[in-house]
Structures are given as C-alpha cells and as structure tokens.
Image 1 (spheres, each protein chain N blue to C red):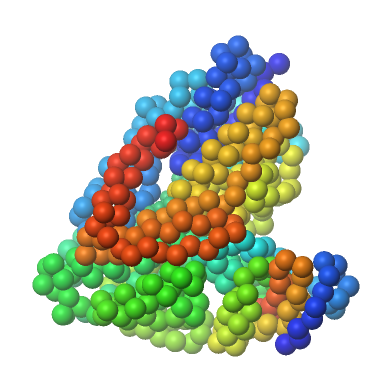
Image 2 (cartoon, helix red, strand yellow):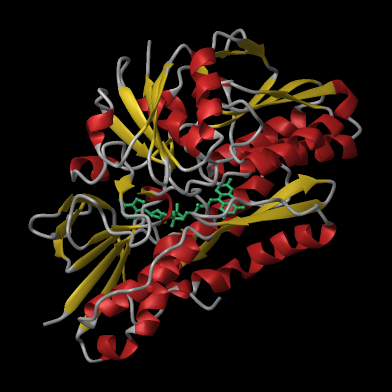
Length: 381
Length: 90
Ligand SMILES: Cc1cc2nc3c(=O)[nH]c(=O)nc-3n(C[C@H](O)[C@H](O)[C@H](O)COP(=O)(O)OP(=O)(O)OC[C@H]3O[C@@H](n4cnc5c(N)ncnc54)[C@H](O)[C@@H]3O)c2cc1C
C-alpha cells in the first residue's frame, strides 16, 4: 500500500518540506511505497519578501515569482488546484476545480496567511500597503507622486507576516525621500499597537532611538479601528485620531476558512503543538509556516526551519519509525535599517533576540539571501 | 487585580477563561502582540487567559489594559509561566 503525504500550499513552507521529504524518502518513492503530493492554487511560487522593495522601484512583483515546476523535486506530484475543504474523518481533501477528493495518510497544511484590509472599515479605500503584488505596485505609484505631507505607517494587523517589515518600510522611506531631496517636506509617523515600537524589547530599544535620529515620529498604544478616507484620518480603539496624506498600513491578516470549517482552529490558524507541528484537533494532520498558530513570527525563515524539521518527522512516520525531530522555534530575520544598511535578529522559543549593529555587509547579505532564496525553496540550502 | 501563587491546577482561581492564548516561548513579536491579536477577534465580556513565560508581560498587559479600557483581572504564577486573566470590555 502506498503511503500518501499531501501538502497543501507551495509557498516557502510547502516547497521546502516537499523537496526535503522527497530527498529523505527518495527510495520509498521510487519503489511506490510513498507518494508526496504538493497542491498549490497557482503555477508560480511567490517569494513575498520581494514586495518590500516594490514601492521603492527596486524590484517588481515578477521578480518574486518562479514556476513551481522548476523548483520542486521530480519525485513530488505537483497538483495545480485549489483545496476547498478538508475532511479529517474520511482523511480526504476536496478541490474547487471539479477534481474528485484526494485521500491522504498524512496531511500538511501550509496555506500561508492572507491579508484582509476590508476588515478595518475605511482601510481598503483610505490606505495602501505592500503585502500583495498589486497593492505594492499601487503604492509605488503613490510614492512616486508624493512630494509633501504626512506619511503614516501603521501596524493595524495583529498577527502579521514578518515581524520586522513594518519597521523597515519607514526607515527605507526616510532614506528614499532624503535621496530625492523631499524629506524636509514630509513628516513620517510610525504607529504600533503596544507600549513600545516593537513587540521584542531589545528590538524596540534599538529602533526607538534610531527612529528619533531619523526624525520619524512614533505613536504607541495605537490600534486603529476605522479609517475615514474623506477626512484622511485614522481613529483608534484608544480614542485617538491621526491625520495623514499617505497611509501605509500593515493590514489585518487572516488564516483560512477551510481551517475553521474543518474544526482545526477557530481563528483560521491551525492549532498545533509548537514542537511536533501536529494539529491539536485531528490525527495525522500537521501545519507549519504562516497558517500555523505558533508562538513565533510569521516569517519565511521560521517556515523554512519548521519545514526541515517536519520533513524529518514525516520521513520517520512513513518508515513506521517513531518521529523524534522537533522544531525549536528557530527564526532569523534580516532588518533593513535604511541608508543602505541592515541588521538581523535570530531567536527561538527559549531565546530572545538582540539586533546587531546595522552594516552595509548585512544589507548585502539580505539582498544576497533574497537571490539565493530559490536554492532554499529547492531544499538545497 | 489579584495576584496568586498557584500550582498547575485550576483550583486556585475562581476564574474560567473563555479562550487561552499560549504565548509561552513567544519571543517575537511577543505575548502582548499575541494577546492583542486575540482581543480583536473576541466578543466583549470574554475572559482571555494569556500564558506567558516573560516577566515583562504583566506590567505591559496591565498598562495596555488600562489604556484600552480592558481589565487585567488576575495573575496566577505557575511553575514555568504566568497565567494572566484579561477581561475584554466594549
Ligand atoms: C512584504 C513582506 C515582507 C516579508 N519579509 C520577510 C523577511 O524579510 N524575512 C522573513 O523571514 N519573512 C518575511 N516575510 C514573511 C514570509 O514571506 C512568510 O512568512 C512566508 O512566505 C510563509 O511561508 P508559507 O509557506 O507559510 O506561506 P506562503 O509563502 O504564503 O505560501 C502559501 C502558499 O499556499 C497557496 N495556497 C493558499 N491557499 C491554498 C489552497 N486553498 N489550495 C492550494 N494552495 C493554496 C498559496 O498560493 C501559496 O503558494 C515577508 C512577508 C511579506 C508580505
């Protein structure tokens, strides 16, 4: 009997997992004992961190895409279709393209996160963002025309992808505007939901003074509940109001209705054991990457490290051995700090990160990483 | 707000949480952000139990609750983490 592993989502988590697993159980695939199926709803793999550079004209959404066919091990069956339901009783997934249900022995959910700006009234009409390809291009057009006024960068969505992108955008915008001789005519304000500019104390301690030095205003305890696009103002749960000329938000995020409907997590994120990545509410179901409710960041590196560890567990499981590999929460994030420099933080479930002093070298490392990412997705790094 | 010492059983608090946010080991972006994420999704009146192993969470939550009109009702010290009970108001 063939043991079938179905992976839903061919982003960072799903691709790294599929490639690593195919390598670990290559012989079993060749003999027909194991089958690895990767389902993705479009033919391209998208590397989302590229979008940060789109508003500044440094990259295009096309740079973020590669055909999955080129990235995925030939031993993996690639299915381009959209999963629209999961039945954990009959152990099947269903598709919205008319294809019949597919049975699984092990199911891995790696559908990522989606952005839902419409959840905050007025935000979709009044604000811009760089968390999607079209939105990032629209923002590029806006920024190109923006010569004076108040630029507000507001973290609305909690949780959100990439813990540091909200800091990178205002720091990069500051440099970008300075280079164009426009900075004197633009005020920049950054807003964050809690009592400091970042959730991690050490990052907050580092970025607070840096923002002050760059003349970026910081508003904390700032949780927008609605935006008035006509008046161009943001209104918060705390009863505050902030006017803007250009609003760039980190929009609200959502997991997946499929997860809610399957009873795998009430908020659309899959409830999992943080170490084994096994779903809390169903047997033989796992989740990793942004769709998993994990006590770490929704970051590509977390998805990557979790995928290598889950590949080990699944390889043991299909071999009938007791899985022992565990994910320790390892995450590494590069942080662009403007002026052509960057820093990075590394952490896991037990250790808090401390940012290193920013340097040009780290900035080039980040750009280098973005280029070599395609090797990561192939499972080669 | 009441602060109690507890073992890992529920008998030492009268409170029943409606939902639990397990932020033990959540270093980035941290327990406070996990709590706010949940607070945005729940109905007014919900009691959230935030589990955190970070000692700064209590003062942070206390300050946030005050500013946002919510209430930190009780903190129970467990063996390796704290349970913070937060009532979400309107
Ligand atoms: C602007 C921006 C900057 C970022 N910068 C960084 C950074 O510097 N460093 C970092 O570590 N992380 C960064 N991230 C976060 C990183 O991109 C994500 O954490 C990472 O992509 C998560 O991988 P994933 O595989 O879980 O999800 P994704 O990469 O989103 O992949 C999910 C895949 O599932 C597919 N899918 C979804 N639903 C279905 C379905 N029903 N059926 C079939 N297929 C489906 C999607 O098409 C997609 O291919 C950034 C994110 C953004 C938006």
